[in-house]
Amino acid sequence: MMMTTTSRPPRRRVSIRARVLASMILLVGFALAVSGAAIYVYERQELNARLDDSLTRTVEEFRVLAETGIDPQTGNGFKHAEDLLYTAMQRTLPARYQGMVGLSADQLQWTAPATVEMRLEEDPQFLEWAKTSAADQHVRIENFETELSEYRAIVVPIQLSSDPKPARFVLAYDYTAEVSRINKQFMVFFGVGLVVMLLAGGAAYLIVGRMLEPIRRLRDTARQISESDQSSRIEVTGDDEFAELTVTVNDMLDRLQDALNSQRQLLDDVGHELRTPVTIIRGHLELMDVQDSEDVAQTKDIALDELKRMSLLINDLMTLAGANRADFLSAKPTDIGTLLDEILDKVRALGNRDWRIGHREEANVTLDPARITQAMLQLAANAVKFSDEGSRIDLGSAMLEEQDKAPVLRLWVHDAGVGIAPEDLERIFERFGRGQNSDRAKGSGLGLNIVSAIADSHGGSVWVDSVPGSGSTFYIDIPLAEGAHSV
Image (cartoon, rainbow, N blue to C red):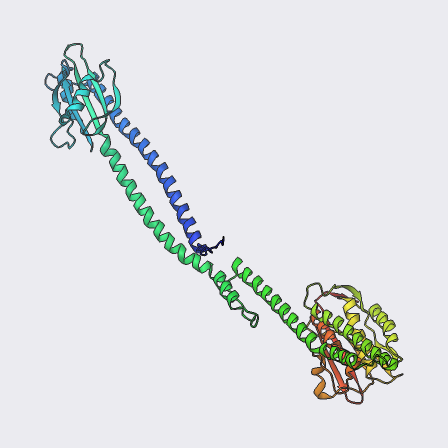
């Protein structure tokens, strides 16, 4: 049974901008909802307190009128409940969404003036409730809901000692209308909030887009970079965290480009330079007469000599390949005078020459003594290679200090050899670069390139002053930071 597999289509990713905008809108919406709900609850509580306060003040005024008021018809205190009720209603001016009625012996006796919009007498359910409310002669503020509306009402029972006929003063607010007014306000609030959210979302869309522009440039640059072209870099704008990220990524791309170039150069060099000794060894082995012991010995010597040169070449290539690594140098405070003495002791084994120190600088500087020794030994080996036995070779060091410039440590090797032709002065520092006087069999052609790499890693340079037939002087200049050396 053959099983078939189907690949799922790639999920569409939600962009960072969309996620940030969605998060911001949700956060703003949640904040508006919570704050709106809190304010709404507060407004409802304030509404109840305001209505109760208004109804309570009306009752207090009614009590004062009952105790101290004068009946306008008799000029004396009130004797009849109906007269007190009538006078109280005459002096009460209902607010908006407020109405009142007067009941005498559980019958509707008085109503609010015609100018009052809220007509309590038009709601039979409310009138029935008013007749039965406050049966215990206590004043109460209650909510009562009918088919027409909901009311916040107070019923004031009136019973005078001089009048056995009871009465009731009823004052009520249209609670539904009051709440509806608050609801309309909050509908406006949420409408404005929605518009603000949309405007904020639009503004945030533009702002987040500008903030994420470095990320887009990073993405576009990463797409442009290929094995054949690693030169693209991201433009640094601003001085925020994204700018720091851009600088960091550019530095990383520089290191990657250097590593790729070094790797490519290493492969090219290995393929170019190792091909010759391999061809030589293979050719001699193919032509070797195994029955001729002399031919076998000669072929063996040639193969060993070529293998030795291959080993030297591989070591030099590995040194150059590591020159771009951060751990290539191990800098530390070094006494230049002592270092030069140690180098002099080591170069004596390179050849029978008159080795001397032409000038010694007594100073303590920060550098990698092992790499500097390697570079000086390479320059000394070159001097031996192109000078006569017994000739003089000078080593030297000096501190160059100019006003308004950082001090420079200069090291040199001077020989009295054959010199270098002017057209070869620049080429000899390139990989496998050789002058006209060079013999291929005597080296890998990478020695001076290694010296150049060591100088570059110290932030310095290497150069040569040479006159054909009169010798050469190779210089290594290493700039020092202020305060990085002491006498």
